[in-house]
Amino acid sequence: MEWNWTFAFAILPHLLEGAKTTILATFLGFLIAIVLGLAMALGRRSQQPWIARAVGLCADFIRGTPLLVQLYVLFFVLPNMGVVLSPLVAGVIGLGLHNATYIAEVYRAGIESISRGQWEASKACNLGISQTWRHIIIPQAIPPMIPALANYLIAMFKETPLLSAITVYEIMGEALGAASRTYRYLEPVTMVGVFFLIISLVCAYFARVIEERVRIHQ
Amino acid sequence: MTNPIIRIKNISKSFGAVRVLDGLSIDVMPKERLALIGPSGSGKTTILRILMTLERINDGHIEIDGEQLYHMQRAGQLVPADEKHLAKARQKIGMVFQHFNLFPHKSVIDNITLAPIVTKGVAKPKAEKRAMELLDMVGLADKARSMPSALSGGQKQRVAIARALALQPEIMLFDEVTSALDPELVEEVLSVLWQLSTETDMTMLLVTHEMGFAHDFAHRVLFFDRGKIVEEGKPDDIFRQPKHERTQAFLKKILAAGHRI
Image (cartoon, rainbow over all chains, first blue to last red; front, side):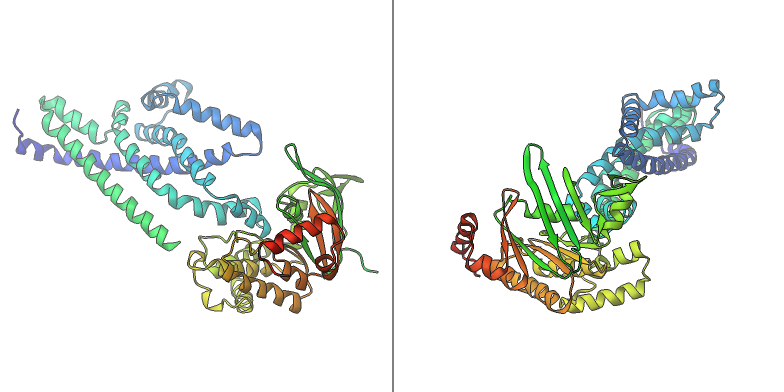
């Protein structure tokens, strides 16, 4: 099979349309993951043992099952219980929830890397618990987390093709659509691969820049 | 007759099986400066940490300004203090740590203004004005916008002192504040403490291995060993004529190590 430029250009608009959805799903999912992940990380450190345990069990359960299964549950099973989600919403929630459980561990490691002296100085400065979190712990814990968070962003981005399983027309879905109409897989699949490669490299670059900025700022 | 500002009654503290404080009682009068000396592990740092509520006590009572620290009245009964009670009690106390514990992500001036702004609602310009006065006092006005990482150990510690003073505590706790410093930086921190002792009348508790400074600084010296006060008295008496043999042995060892009195 030879590379066919005409075909490649013909499907490009479809793929770009799909790429928009891919990027949208990734960023919305990431937003959910970093917010929910923080909530989970804090929940696991709760003084109330039952909160810490419940959050831990939920996280283990979500981490222990495949994202694809979770997407099927969100999109195909929940409607049986009266919860109907659009494909994109179900996909974003699945992606965000699944990765929140991993990102929670990134937060946990970042929080635990803050020395006890910082907590004690906060206490000596009379800061309350929430003030200590807000002004002392979180601002210090975030910068070293940036590389790990960026890795998760890139990983999530590369997970979005799973969303095609629940009829989200992201880039892989569009590519497969084009392929099944023409039985040509070389161009669509290669182009999808190149797209992911470019975006991943760009993300990694920006993550490095942000990390350096934040470190210099400190 | 004034009442003690700190009244420590028969407190005990264990870490696991190790009993670091054993039925200890101390009264500290307002404006009094106390030096706590003794070998490492004798419990002197633990007392400061307990007063700052960084450690809980296993037994006994502490009163600050006549108010219970670790207990509170509830329905006519004395019950363990909750976080709110502790937070209120902490307002009267400031602490400076051996390892400075500055907030590394905040500039020098922000380290000092954070707590007044956040905990007392002081307006930022007012807090910064006060911070500059304090920095001026510790000789670091030119470092206000520096980050802590750009400072020497002695400078960090002076900022830490300014930070603690910004909350205007009645009682200041100094926990081996020069122990982590290079020898040539010790003097600049001690001179700030000296200045505090001459210019303010705060109650101060100083845990130190600088015997010469303790002698000049303190009104009263307590010698600790194994969680108990072995000997206490005026600096001249403790340093020139220690009565207890453990005090004598400790001071001899310290002097042999090159510390001056």
